[in-house]
Amino acid sequence: MKKISLMGATGSIGTQTLDIIREHPAEFHLVAMAVGKNIDLTRKIINEFRPELVSTSDKSTAQILKSEFPHITFTYGNDGLSEVAVYHKAEVLVNAVTGSIGLMPTLQAIEAKKMIAIANKETLVTAGHLVMEAANKNSVTLLPVDSEHSAIFQALQGEKDKNIDKLILTASGGSFRDRTRKELENVTVQEALNHPNWSMGAKITIDSATMMNKGLEVIEAHWLFSIDYDKIEVLLHKESIIHSMIEFHDSSVIAQLGTPDMRVPIQYALTYPDRLPLNSANRLNLAEVGKLHFQKMDLDRFRCLKFAYDAGRTGGTMPTVLNAANEAAVAAFLDGKVSFLQIEDLIEKALSNHINISNPSLSDIQEVDAETRNYVYSLLKAEAP
Ligand code: NDP
Ligand code: MG
Image (tube, rainbow, N blue to C red; front, side, top):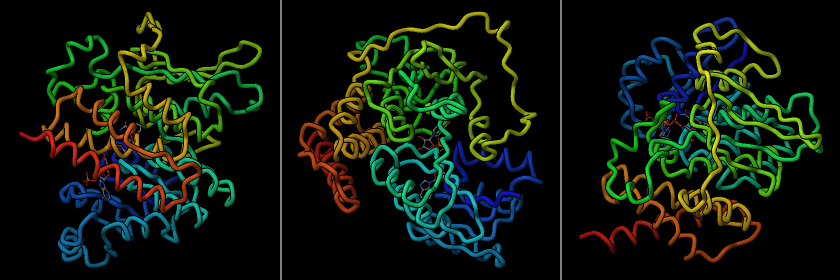
């Protein structure tokens, strides 16, 4: 029986993690969880899974729930997130919050020597060097949940890193893959939220449409697999059947395939190095799929991907700026404050405004993250009618 702490339990990855726990009650047990503001879903989850510790993003939600569930311990805010991350009874932390808010609890869970199933890619983008250094020092394994990274992790089993030529990350292309840049000028939030293959949280769905998601994943892969940016390639593959591949020196390519279903990589992170049946998953039927398509990635069409490669190669605090500017710009787009293409412009301005700090400390990262968000807010204010 593996005891699990889950951050972001009410989200897309969070609820699919609960599906896995539900399907395997003899294998997994939810002991602690952190949620944001979705109180109705939190009630349902508590009733079904009975965790011992629950953290909410604000105090008032925790107080309401405490009056309904007096036997459960409630906490809240950033401290609450940290308490869930290091909860003494949990062996594994599933980090499924969105954004760099996941950084501190991840570092704390590493210090507490928890195994970490990491979906929260922003944490690796904003401070990959600190997270990997801490994980190595504490002999903690970071198990990828992101489907591309899980595919690479699976294809790597039994292989030696030294034999890798390159990683090939596949990209579905997001909601607007068939539109020209001109056609992107007036797209709506609703259109952007309509992803062709995956049903995910709002932020990552917009990131998929701008291709920033693939940019964040390139940086995530750089840290998780300790590989040069020159050896990470992105390939458009609209069916999302091949989740990613590794090309080895001898020209062999090993890929992982499956229907697009995040429960597969989530479950693999929880069962690694073993596997369990996943009866509710749709089996891949290649005869039915018929054809798979691939296309070279156009970095002029998808500028966010280029920003990410550049920021990753420059290193220092550039990826922190990329991530923070993106978080602020996507939130502004979802709030209807900027157009879709302005997301890129805001990120570009933030990157060119920043004076890079090489080998940043945790406090440098936290400062740059906050400054970048403030810079984007100031641009939004200046542009507001
Ligand atoms: P969602 O937006 O669906 O979920 C985010 C979760 O975080 C919710 O449970 C939300 O709570 C919670 N949350 C938000 N703010 C806080 C806070 N201040 N304190 C505690 N909890 C908070 O996101 P996804 O599940 O889509 O994505 C999660 C992460 O996984 C992201 O980093 C994403 O990039 C990554 N990922 C997601 C994939 C997917 O298929 N969805 C695929 C690969 C990676 P509430 O709703 O209660 O407010
Ligand atoms: Mg992914």
